[in-house]
Image (cartoon, rainbow, N blue to C red; front, side):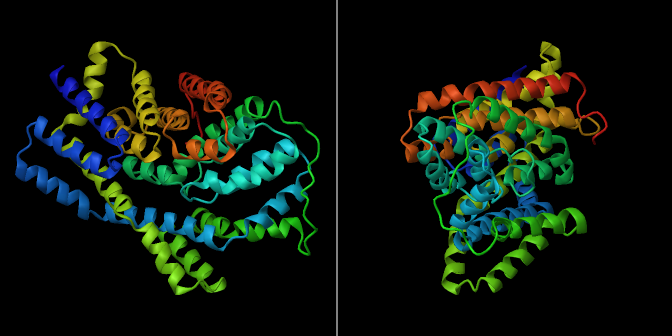
Length: 409
């Protein structure tokens, strides 16, 4: 029981540090060192395990991948014509409700920080013509911007979880795509009720190019990366690197812009995040602390499903950061998630609860950006997103009870 108290204190400390804006990576690194000390590891072994995790090939590959993903998103933000994307969608789809869903959802395919702010002007352009309230526009922009986070392989959260579980990320995509579908359906039911179904006129002159070609022009780099990895088994690092070089060549991106994007991408926070997560995981395993949670929970009679849901939900809710709930929750819950082989139902449940915690967090950057952009009442926005968020969590628990993912994995 003392060991469980120690682990609980470490978890509380991590949440407090992240909530106080201490970088997630530094918080996890400090948490890992504290794990080693509290669980009696010699200082020399703590240093050895930390160094081993930092220089491990898996860690360096993960670091390269995350940096390339962030750079890729920033590059797309620099070179793509989002006005053309708006024209394409509004001309392809004549239903206001669907257009308002698709605008942030398509931008959600571009893995870039603060993407909700990128789609906000397009949602405003359509929503203003239909007389929608600031709260409806905020909710539509915020909710549908994140529907792919459960299953799109270029999201860092998916990449991090695959690395921590040591599984191919497409297996995570396969088991969690049901959550994205549920998020779309729940958003359609709860977030678009007051949006009229009438057609929407873009107000732009017709472009020479067809709407479909405009759409393809906007998202082909993302499709290329996914195709190379999924159908040709090209490592994501190589696929991203190739696509980035191709984009720079085709769009004639200037050297000064490339250097600026590199400075924005390769930041201290990004680098230390990867090292912090892997060091935290390594020290949890080396100290034996990782075995504490399942053993003590079983003695207390607490269902593993409850633990697998509450921990990521709490971390996500209090931090508002996807990397935080993945980096903190997965190492602690590994004995539940991989007792002998991967328990895919629990993996799905952890991510479902963690991301909904992030979505409901009052410190989530995208929520604050969207609310401020549309000048919405945050309480009214919460009234719209809380019911679908809670229902998605219940849906995930229900799937686990039914034995999901059945024969999918």
